[in-house]
Image (tube, rainbow, N blue to C red; front, top):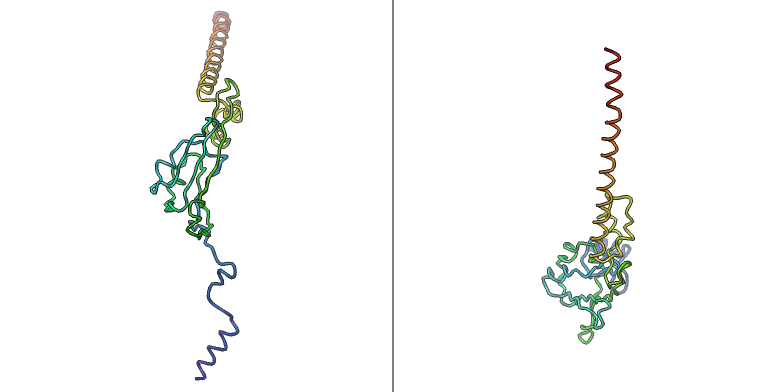
Length: 201
């Protein structure tokens, strides 16, 4: 009896050992898979996430006026496999550790993650496009410090190809000019070297 009273007294001093939720905050592991979210600044509408989604929980639909598209994630269908996050080429898909997803049956169709993304006109030809994310453009064109990633990301694929082709042609022309100049300089130096050899002899 004395041992029981000792344990009881210690427990009264320590307080409850059970989780206080829902009356208080609870511990949430940092890597807990809670809700799938999409970053509209990074999404380019490529559709990779939709194709790899095991539960078919992702939909990408163009707007009626073709001014952009909407991406929708049905959270009731999402199985949190994280395939969308793994395969997304721009890093737009992620899974937060927000696990507060309980809801009434009547609210199931409201449990969605949805982003509406507008197209922008190409800075050269005006064609409506989804600009490349700045981080992706910086990564792709990191080898060329003279090229502005912010400029190239606002070009449509056709204008981007033309810009790359013209840039490659300029570089090739500069290299050819440098080679011609080197050859001409070598030709000018050759008679002088020959004359010096004759005088030495």
